[in-house]
Image (cartoon, rainbow, N blue to C red; front, top):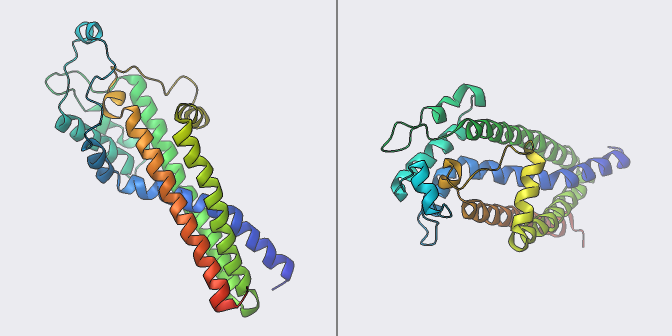
Length: 247
């Protein structure tokens, strides 16, 4: 293989690796979201229902606090919706059919349902991008590993891809921990149309998934991807040293 082409493949792997490991982590978290909901709702400091809603607003809207069990059960339906393979428009009925416990009122209003359609569009797109990144990374590594003379470049790509992932995810993790409010706003502004993702404390999306739910999710997700980056970088370094004999 031409050395210039081999180096081009190496850099393509290095640049794609953070997206691959990051998107893969997101997909794994979505696939295991039921466990995360149980974990988060089981915390002693998880916000009670209607936290932040003034008493007069509760009376005006006729809101009654939901039990943790009721909230968890309703949240699981949202998880089921996101995990379905069908397009958002075909499975949004799962959320449209939900009702507030003890009343016949819809659980979600039209704005909330519209946002959940957008959310599934994003998660589905991340799933497709994960496959694309996997093809680039694994396919590129396969090409470099195929020939003995380029195997050291494959191991170098793994190491450098792990390092680049570690640096990027370390920044993101610190951004989340130290400036959560800014990160939360910028993240939503980047992915969703302006004005479509903000809701009142009395809306069901906030009642079921308060801000702490997403803060903990962001920290756990970024640290997991960071860990994958570190493991990948160390693995690439060891492969270079042990197999390729590169110092």
